[in-house]
Figure (cartoon, rainbow, N blue to C red):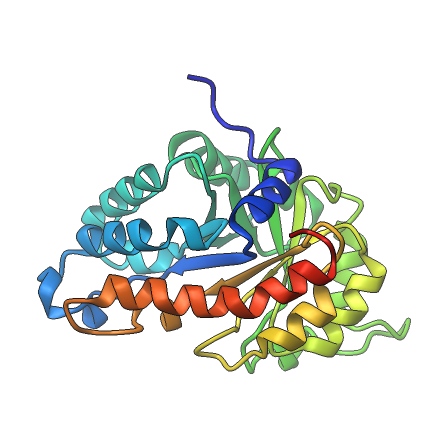
Length: 274
């Protein structure tokens, strides 16, 4: 069967079908797994995916949590990606970025071998290090303004032209791709900046981490960042994965995802998507 093309039209259609902007981060830590799964990462991931398939439009495996397990972790990551299947965007949260021939190998591994649809990329080394990730039907998700406290150290520094560094990153990288293949990471802890970025980039999708455990305001972000196509992938990881540590952890995960969607849907109605 031909591979599903998970382009912008796919995302918009999924938003309308599921009535959601939710992306679930699979930051699966063995130390946090419920006793009932006996430290079995794959069993846990499958249960979370089965419980939340109808609550989200994307999954985002965080590669670090699997790499930390060595060769076994890579197998678990591959099996998890395969289990997600074709109905959701699969984002490799890998934050890659290196000289061109190295980036090309990262792209081959993550897109061609592992079957992911998108990758988070650090643009610090410039265009020749990001361009290898641009492949037909794939998404490049560029770090712009992240949700962590350290984002103030560099990303918000004011340049000689008056722009913030993250704004310069967005303006420069926008020419490397288009709104059909490029997203930006904008942290939920910066709603006013998200609003300003939406005015400058009306058509791009933004990946929004920082809702849930990091304290981002979901309503504020939807107000600030949504456009007529949705325009946001709102990521939640720990607040969904570890909503409960008992035998009903998957049911609790579904309940938390549903709670978030109940907050998102009035905003989808506001822009006419549902």
